[in-house]
Image 1 (cartoon, rainbow, N blue to C red):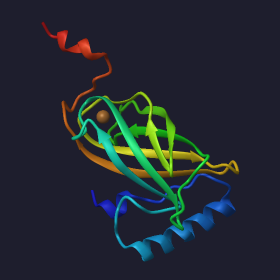
Image 2: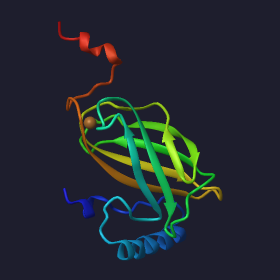
Image 3: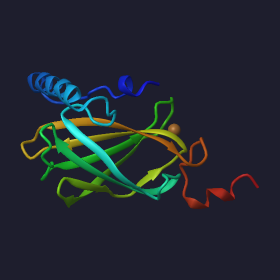
Image 4: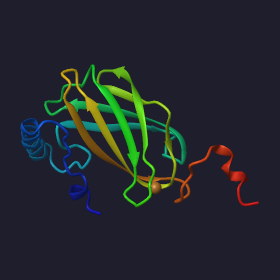
Length: 158
Ligand SMILES: [Cu+2]
């Protein structure tokens, strides 16, 4: 799973804007080089994951979100979807809290399985435009099976 192929630019907006953002994304890629996490109309960096290393269970992802010019995205509504690429995965979709300076922290996020996750960040900008960007978050620690129940699921299997 090559990183540069995996991180396809995703833009959900009207077609004209999508084309513009796609072009900007290409320019950003050329300008920034293959940094993997950063392409497209939003420059999304996961600046921290708590606990660290990321582990199955409750977690807080702190994101830094900038536009292609490097300006922090302020006044946006940011939704974070955590998912994996295998069939049957139940995505985890949560809201975020703005921390200022383009930083946002997830509320009530939870890693339900160990393994490689994909974090999809959906931003509704102040002008109503919706932009989406995905970031890989690999190697979440813990069991590679569904953990849809609460913490007392360790009681199972007796
Ligand atoms: Cu999964």
